[in-house]
Length: 177
Length: 208
Image (cartoon, each protein chain N blue to C red):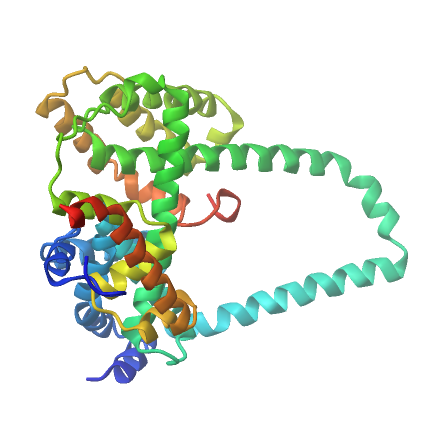
């Protein structure tokens, strides 16, 4: 059954079709959300929210992109909002608490290249990181990223270029070694 | 790195390890989706989905019509003179509603973060935050906000969870965490909070 037929059956109220739609797309959505969230609990919560919202709004799907891309656009929006809330919350709580008592997680003196790279990806600005994760980590095309983020494919290419430049900069001393 | 805008081969492999996901917990997530949709009544027959926006539009048009009718009959001043008392009560109700929503939103953020970060040396921060939220929670339980049964029950269950976290020792033991998790799961605190505070919505957009 293709996506169009599946959507028709979901809209007609067929619960089996809802499950089939979920099964067909959940892996890709989960991979993307987990890559962005980096935490299993949050990833599960946000994937669930993605499908709940998608079922609520399926009648609004116009087929301008593939169903998979449309689901990913919902997932990215929920994940970015969730990450912003976590960030705001952390900032607020750290401000309330004595700053000297937090952030004492021990770090290894000489992190290896992988650790440095992952930290550098974490530190990318939100837009760069999203495009980088979608393209270089999860293999989305610029066309798909454009649809999912509501930007032109050219903007996605430019953000990826800048993201890679930032990473190169962050790892420059490794390259010299 | 080599190349102008490409990552070199070794980095590509390392990039693939970035937050590498395991297998998607399909069944667990699907069951949670079903529970949340059933609880919030979001699973509706498709004909309702089509009619609800039309009914809402009709209601708005009706309200506008009634408003225009009253104005054109000159009855506006009479309505306005009777307005202050209910308007004040409504304003108070709205204020409690917003404060409660903000509190529940903060609690949801906190518990989400707590679940994922406890054991990473942030127990002290977690306990102090839980104590702060507990104070607000108790004030809300003593306020008109708790007159709504559903809100009161949620605040009561939340109180137990927050109290458990507030009393966590510096070295968290596994059984302490199990008790807190049990409290959250048996009362379905997180799903109920999320029903009140939809993901990504600003507090003013949510609904109790």
